Length: 128
Image 1 (tube, rainbow, N blue to C red):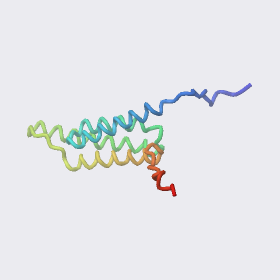
Image 2: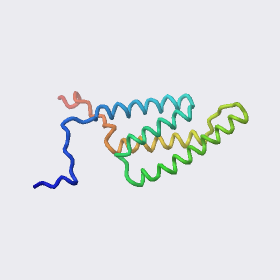
Image 3: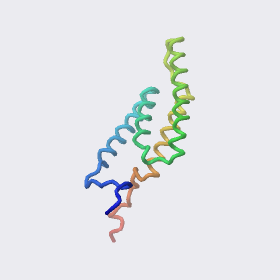
């Protein structure tokens, strides 16, 4: 009798296309939010992107996320307090840099996981 305690049956269909579509939508949202200096939306998109990528991440990358999330939350709260005091909404350079670094880290994970396919050479260039 076969031991099935550590195995799961594999479905003949997978969600790869749906998964890549979600990643693409989240990356587009990150681009729009960063262009518009919308820190809260950018952060929410990064949180969702992180959730999608956890299956591709190493344990230390997942653990590091807690510190990153806390730091960004702290900076967002600081920005909110400043807005309450001054009625001016400005994205601090520190917060922008932190969000940007975080997005770049997630993009690197995508690339290292093979989720961003490399461009193949032009097939017509081999024709002689």
